[in-house]
Length: 196
Image (tube, rainbow, N blue to C red; front, side, top):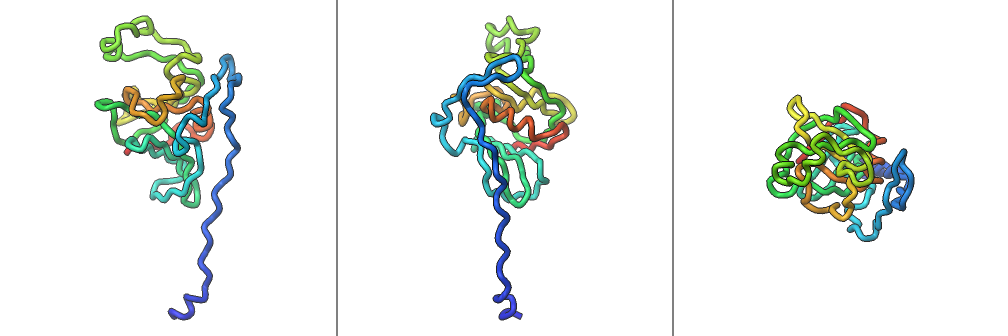
Protein backbone atom coordinates (compact mmCIF):
# COMPACT_ATOMS: atom_id res chain seq x y z
CA UNK A 1 0.00 0.00 0.00
CA UNK A 2 2.83 2.40 0.89
CA UNK A 3 4.62 1.69 -2.40
CA UNK A 4 1.40 2.32 -4.33
CA UNK A 5 0.76 5.68 -2.64
CA UNK A 6 4.27 6.83 -3.55
CA UNK A 7 3.37 6.48 -7.24
CA UNK A 8 0.33 8.75 -7.04
CA UNK A 9 1.27 12.32 -7.99
CA UNK A 10 0.45 15.00 -5.43
CA UNK A 11 -2.34 17.32 -6.45
CA UNK A 12 -1.02 20.74 -7.36
CA UNK A 13 -2.67 23.58 -5.47
CA UNK A 14 -5.13 25.65 -7.47
CA UNK A 15 -3.58 28.78 -8.95
CA UNK A 16 -4.51 32.05 -7.24
CA UNK A 17 -7.30 34.08 -8.83
CA UNK A 18 -6.19 37.03 -10.93
CA UNK A 19 -7.01 40.60 -9.97
CA UNK A 20 -7.59 43.63 -12.10
CA UNK A 21 -5.13 46.31 -10.91
CA UNK A 22 -6.49 49.30 -9.01
CA UNK A 23 -5.75 52.81 -10.26
CA UNK A 24 -4.77 54.95 -7.27
CA UNK A 25 -4.58 58.16 -9.30
CA UNK A 26 -7.18 60.91 -8.96
CA UNK A 27 -10.46 60.07 -10.67
CA UNK A 28 -14.14 60.89 -10.64
CA UNK A 29 -16.47 58.77 -8.48
CA UNK A 30 -20.08 59.83 -8.83
CA UNK A 31 -20.43 63.47 -7.78
CA UNK A 32 -17.00 63.55 -6.14
CA UNK A 33 -13.35 63.19 -7.06
CA UNK A 34 -11.09 60.62 -5.42
CA UNK A 35 -7.74 62.09 -4.51
CA UNK A 36 -4.59 60.40 -5.79
CA UNK A 37 -2.76 58.10 -3.36
CA UNK A 38 0.99 57.56 -3.51
CA UNK A 39 0.73 53.77 -3.15
CA UNK A 40 4.54 53.49 -3.13
CA UNK A 41 4.57 55.43 0.15
CA UNK A 42 2.57 52.62 1.82
CA UNK A 43 4.42 49.45 2.92
CA UNK A 44 3.87 46.65 0.41
CA UNK A 45 2.30 44.25 2.93
CA UNK A 46 -0.59 46.74 3.21
CA UNK A 47 -1.25 46.78 -0.55
CA UNK A 48 -4.32 44.93 -1.85
CA UNK A 49 -3.18 41.45 -2.90
CA UNK A 50 -4.19 37.79 -3.20
CA UNK A 51 -2.48 35.68 -0.52
CA UNK A 52 -2.60 32.00 0.53
CA UNK A 53 -5.01 31.79 3.49
CA UNK A 54 -6.28 28.67 5.21
CA UNK A 55 -9.38 29.01 7.36
CA UNK A 56 -12.48 27.08 8.36
CA UNK A 57 -14.60 30.16 7.60
CA UNK A 58 -16.87 30.21 4.55
CA UNK A 59 -15.91 31.86 1.27
CA UNK A 60 -17.08 35.47 1.40
CA UNK A 61 -16.36 35.95 5.12
CA UNK A 62 -14.38 39.03 6.14
CA UNK A 63 -11.70 38.43 8.77
CA UNK A 64 -10.00 41.44 10.35
CA UNK A 65 -6.73 40.99 12.21
CA UNK A 66 -6.47 44.02 14.50
CA UNK A 67 -2.84 43.59 15.54
CA UNK A 68 -1.68 43.11 11.94
CA UNK A 69 -3.90 45.92 10.55
CA UNK A 70 -5.13 43.61 7.80
CA UNK A 71 -8.54 42.66 6.39
CA UNK A 72 -9.01 39.34 4.56
CA UNK A 73 -11.90 38.48 2.26
CA UNK A 74 -11.96 34.67 2.16
CA UNK A 75 -11.81 33.25 -1.38
CA UNK A 76 -11.98 29.70 -2.73
CA UNK A 77 -9.08 27.22 -2.75
CA UNK A 78 -7.32 28.53 0.38
CA UNK A 79 -6.77 32.09 -0.84
CA UNK A 80 -7.90 35.47 0.44
CA UNK A 81 -7.96 39.00 -0.87
CA UNK A 82 -5.99 41.05 1.66
CA UNK A 83 -6.17 44.80 2.27
CA UNK A 84 -4.29 47.10 4.63
CA UNK A 85 -6.23 48.92 7.35
CA UNK A 86 -6.06 51.50 10.06
CA UNK A 87 -7.67 50.09 13.21
CA UNK A 88 -8.73 51.31 16.65
CA UNK A 89 -6.12 53.04 18.75
CA UNK A 90 -5.51 51.89 22.31
CA UNK A 91 -8.76 51.81 24.24
CA UNK A 92 -10.86 51.78 21.05
CA UNK A 93 -9.99 48.36 19.66
CA UNK A 94 -12.44 45.49 19.88
CA UNK A 95 -12.91 41.89 18.79
CA UNK A 96 -16.02 39.90 18.01
CA UNK A 97 -18.45 38.94 15.29
CA UNK A 98 -20.57 41.30 13.19
CA UNK A 99 -22.66 41.33 10.04
CA UNK A 100 -22.71 43.90 7.25
CA UNK A 101 -26.28 45.18 7.46
CA UNK A 102 -26.03 48.34 5.35
CA UNK A 103 -23.80 49.76 2.60
CA UNK A 104 -23.52 53.39 1.49
CA UNK A 105 -21.85 55.47 -1.27
CA UNK A 106 -20.23 58.68 -0.01
CA UNK A 107 -22.06 58.34 3.32
CA UNK A 108 -23.01 61.06 5.77
CA UNK A 109 -20.94 60.99 8.95
CA UNK A 110 -22.48 61.88 12.30
CA UNK A 111 -20.05 61.90 15.22
CA UNK A 112 -21.50 60.24 18.32
CA UNK A 113 -22.11 62.45 21.39
CA UNK A 114 -19.17 60.95 23.30
CA UNK A 115 -16.82 61.87 20.41
CA UNK A 116 -18.18 65.42 20.39
CA UNK A 117 -17.51 65.63 24.15
CA UNK A 118 -13.89 64.53 23.54
CA UNK A 119 -13.49 66.77 20.49
CA UNK A 120 -15.80 69.82 20.84
CA UNK A 121 -14.86 71.19 17.40
CA UNK A 122 -17.00 68.35 15.94
CA UNK A 123 -20.17 69.96 17.34
CA UNK A 124 -20.78 71.54 13.92
CA UNK A 125 -21.42 68.04 12.53
CA UNK A 126 -23.84 66.90 15.27
CA UNK A 127 -26.58 66.63 12.61
CA UNK A 128 -24.25 64.97 10.09
CA UNK A 129 -21.43 65.89 7.72
CA UNK A 130 -22.48 65.34 4.10
CA UNK A 131 -20.55 62.80 2.05
CA UNK A 132 -17.54 64.08 0.16
CA UNK A 133 -13.75 63.96 -0.13
CA UNK A 134 -13.19 65.39 3.38
CA UNK A 135 -15.80 63.24 5.12
CA UNK A 136 -14.15 60.79 7.60
CA UNK A 137 -16.19 57.85 6.20
CA UNK A 138 -14.76 58.36 2.75
CA UNK A 139 -16.15 57.01 -0.51
CA UNK A 140 -17.94 53.93 0.86
CA UNK A 141 -19.03 52.49 4.19
CA UNK A 142 -20.05 49.02 5.30
CA UNK A 143 -22.15 49.32 8.46
CA UNK A 144 -21.72 46.54 11.03
CA UNK A 145 -24.41 44.99 13.24
CA UNK A 146 -22.96 43.51 16.45
CA UNK A 147 -25.04 41.65 19.05
CA UNK A 148 -28.21 42.62 17.19
CA UNK A 149 -27.56 46.36 17.05
CA UNK A 150 -25.51 49.04 15.34
CA UNK A 151 -22.79 49.92 17.83
CA UNK A 152 -21.24 52.51 15.54
CA UNK A 153 -18.57 50.34 13.88
CA UNK A 154 -17.86 50.66 10.17
CA UNK A 155 -15.48 49.46 7.51
CA UNK A 156 -14.97 52.64 5.50
CA UNK A 157 -12.71 54.70 3.30
CA UNK A 158 -10.62 57.54 4.63
CA UNK A 159 -9.21 60.78 3.23
CA UNK A 160 -6.29 60.23 5.66
CA UNK A 161 -4.54 57.57 3.58
CA UNK A 162 -1.31 57.95 5.56
CA UNK A 163 -3.12 56.44 8.57
CA UNK A 164 -3.27 53.01 6.86
CA UNK A 165 -1.18 50.53 8.85
CA UNK A 166 -1.63 52.46 12.10
CA UNK A 167 -3.67 52.19 15.27
CA UNK A 168 -5.47 55.48 14.68
CA UNK A 169 -9.27 55.18 14.60
CA UNK A 170 -12.00 55.26 17.23
CA UNK A 171 -12.85 51.60 16.63
CA UNK A 172 -13.76 51.64 12.94
CA UNK A 173 -11.68 50.06 10.18
CA UNK A 174 -10.28 52.57 7.69
CA UNK A 175 -9.25 51.62 4.17
CA UNK A 176 -7.75 53.41 1.21
CA UNK A 177 -10.59 54.99 -0.79
CA UNK A 178 -9.92 52.88 -3.88
CA UNK A 179 -9.62 49.71 -1.76
CA UNK A 180 -12.91 50.26 0.06
CA UNK A 181 -14.66 50.74 -3.29
CA UNK A 182 -13.18 47.43 -4.43
CA UNK A 183 -14.32 45.63 -1.25
CA UNK A 184 -17.75 47.31 -1.35
CA UNK A 185 -18.35 45.91 -4.83
CA UNK A 186 -17.39 42.39 -3.71
CA UNK A 187 -19.45 41.89 -0.54
CA UNK A 188 -23.22 41.80 -0.14
CA UNK A 189 -25.36 42.81 2.80
CA UNK A 190 -25.37 39.89 5.24
CA UNK A 191 -21.62 39.28 4.96
CA UNK A 192 -20.16 37.85 8.18
CA UNK A 193 -17.29 39.83 9.72
CA UNK A 194 -14.91 38.35 12.30
CA UNK A 195 -12.64 40.74 14.18
CA UNK A 196 -9.76 38.96 15.92
